[in-house]
Image (cartoon, rainbow, N blue to C red; front, side, top):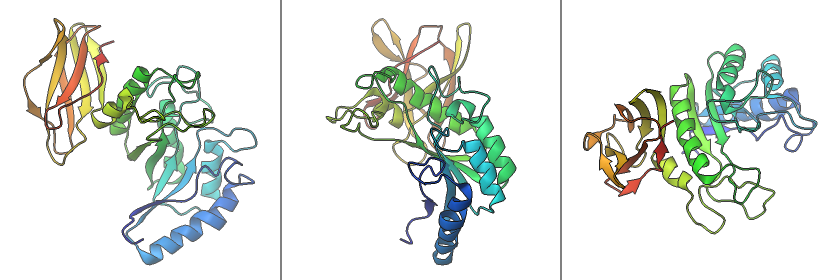
Length: 282
């Protein structure tokens, strides 16, 4: 598979569900380092991610903080540290919640950066699984609209984070068993949730001071600068704010507009006639 340029080694080895016992020493000596050497022997330019840790220890597991430290002591070889910063506390958002503890979620991304930086100073960070489950169908999930909002906020959070190169949403479609992941961009019947449009056109509020609101977003379809319209709901119809403008070459945008608390905004991508979910200014 020479065409594959990025690899991750294993899945959540800090949990006994995936590696028993959940030992960093075993993981490094029998999985990570042999895999690293083998991949580099075939393609020296390939990038190899290690760790791939879950956000918390769980029963019989090892916290990601302890796992990172133990991997360092075991002589881990990697180009990037991979992690799954799923929310685990009620009320967690991409920017708020978490804890000053050994659980590492998106809300505590700076702590992940700190521990990885100490153990592996040259390593990048890949967030290879992340999502919110929705209610319905999972009674412990968030609403579909909140899921869409968190997709946009997570994208902004990672955009701002130094050395974080990757954020992968897990998964595309809900699983049939309610006990498994209901974090899809589509329901089990293939009906799109608002998060699907949020994945294509993430939009997040950066700040608000009185009537002035700053937003961040991205147009992900297409290559190079993309033409978009930032719209505001006024009198029951969507009205463009400033007309059609271009993103930067990577599709990113940041705008400051007049929009008080409660105003409703969205991105409109005319090339695909696609609209982002509505962002309500807070």
